[in-house]
Length: 435
Image (cartoon, rainbow, N blue to C red):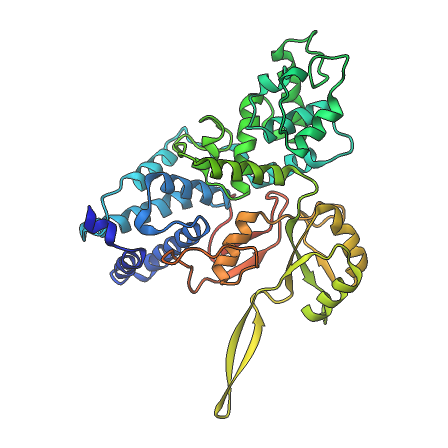
């Protein structure tokens, strides 16, 4: 076992590469794709091959589903990983691992279905509704408060009293309380608790959720709220096992049953809850993508934004340097990784004023082609994954520790945000979208 622990990810990767040399060309492409998407997952979560656990394997499978892969594609990736790890175990580089086969088997069973809230478009519709400050209902505030605090079990949130409120509520939770509390009522939320049973009020919550997302019709509202918390946590960078740990082990509409809850340090749990609160807040800055119009350069656009947009958004235009030979000299030249596509980070409320000022130079990606569709948000996890893949980072990014795998020779293409998935998607060339 001590010998196994001394082997690094680089050694295991070399074993994986040696396996490719024995395969037919068609199989080489499939195995290479598995190695590539596994590299991306490990890099995003600061993991490495030599510390790959059963929990991480399950988390990877959920991440692939959340990225839009079909169930059959995820099962294929798991089976290929099992084959690669078996080869490494035969060489004494790792212990035998059953997790990839077991997760693949669980997903292949007839009763398995992908949890409804893994679908990103549904989560974004719910987030968009819960972020709105206008036309909010007390039930919207109730759901948001439960998500901001735990998640708090729905029955507890329904019967929350003024006397239950302690000190130290976050600003968003306090604003919800201030908006709903009344000295003439002992319960925080005005849901006529004295006249209705908790089950009747929960039915009202279920009806509201179904109006916001018809896919949730008839589902248990308490489980939906817990699952929505888990889904938002995963969208903001947590793994499935980490999100599950914060829902007291139950999030059936977001996390498959084969995932086991992780043991979370207190600081990690606090960070995940803070990220969820950020996703729920209409004031928190988020990443978006714009496309420059014909003839506009990044320098032109950045100057215009600096001069006319206040507050000025953070801009990210990843480039790489290539060297061209001119005679006997090598001349460096900078080339954008995605020509014309610029990423910017700002508050949702500041996007429309920004493009009122610079709309003649660029346009922003939306969830669909209609002019009033919501702007497409890039989740923090997707942005970290993209930055790791292209090797270009914003100043606030923690570069992954030495020894973790960095994707190599990865070709990424920008896929416009579709209405059925609520964020800009970065997908390796050759991957198939779910459905």
